[in-house]
Image (cartoon, rainbow, N blue to C red):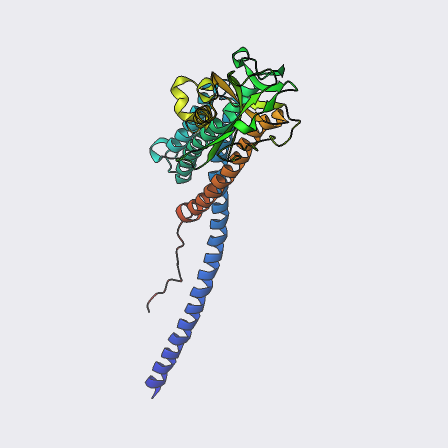
Length: 339
């Protein structure tokens, strides 16, 4: 009888101890988890900032070099780009255990993202420069001419970026044509500039141009063509003249050659004689603002693409910090000992 009571008492004691141990396990695990989570979150946040800092510096440096250095000095631009790449390689090397005696995986990711940022800035800046900036900087190096007659040979103004024509200069809209490209689907419009001294057989030196702003024949409303007081325009630069021969492929997307095809169409349609190398004009009452629009468009595109890039970089940095760099949680409870 006494032995049975003693056995039941022992079982009850074990049961109570099991309950206490389970509660202790739960509390210790919860306390340990909260403590570890707090430290890990702080580490992950710090690593995220570290993963963002150097890549952002590299990206911004190269992008600024595209805007303010590349046009004047390719050597300086390449020096900036190479320095960014070298910095990424150095950081990657410093992450290895065999060099520093301690593995630093977060440095490897910093170097990797910096390398990616350098390449991203190189590619994005390349398209921005050869699409807009190259024209803007060349315009700034050229001259403006006033009181120019449409009958004057354009070869006399090889460095012109802007013309203010004589009062009797006008657009001959009746001889305007639109050439539709089967490749782009756009209509490329041209209209000859004439003055009162010109006859119908004289060569046309200046042509107003535009995209998707005319009908096939005798219609032209590009730029400020509808304003009869407009007498000025911005020269459309010939891509082959503003890039080095080995870089002409970079401006192959320019519509300049399609405007030349539109001029040939106009010659065949109206039996007009175009000058051997005519000057194309964006007909505008404010050519300076039109020139500045090339720079503004580059800035707007840069901001847009940069926001997209930094959003992607932020996501990758957060994922890397929380999933790759933060140590995995270890669930450790109270160790039990058998009787």
